[in-house]
Image: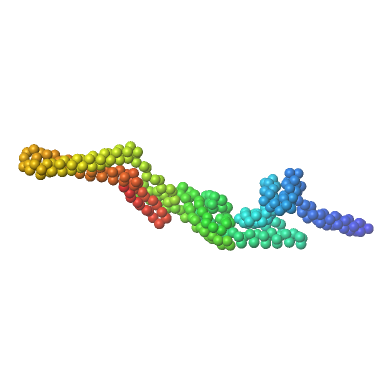
Length: 318
């Protein structure tokens, strides 16, 4: 009798235990209750999708995800970004989506699980993947301003991209790469060469830094030089004309009156020669001064030293 009672009691306990175990997955599968704000945003997003306003629906799901960081939210963002052609964002979001999805337990969950993986595979066909290896201690590693996580992998759109990082000693490591869709590229960042040092007063410019233009000459120097050059040229021309006119007049007078050479004639000839020499000197000085002023105004002054990846480029000007 006692044995029968114990058997019945244990059977009841086992039945209750099996019932509780059967209820546990059902309770675990229930999503947490949503706030009224999230519920309203979901309804508005569904209405936007019914109107085929994908961009509006994406903005609403972004607001939902900011409030409630759920797997459903990140999966919806990935789907909507894929429809909008925002392939890089879609790959990042769908990758997190499939990582956070739990293993499927029902045929419906398996279909959804396979659909998300297929969407991720399709989105990856539209982007390229970079695997960046930076020197030890370099941080942060940026690709077009986007931070690369600890894995060193980042998805980018096809085209040219700039990878930069800062080394512990303050130097920059920089690389430019061009990738196509479906391409996977490994990028090894190396430090830029140190600044080229040259004998003073030459100054080296680090690679990638803009070359500072030479300081323009003072305006008063240009004005003074051009004014003095013009005055000398005009004086030389005037003296040359006056000397030529006096020389012609003196020779014509001598021939007409058949003068003989005397002290007055020699003095007049010497005066004319002096005027001609002065005019020549003024013309030469004005030309030289004008050329020097033009050179100062046009040509940069001083040597320029520029470092590049292949070495140093030194350029002199005067």
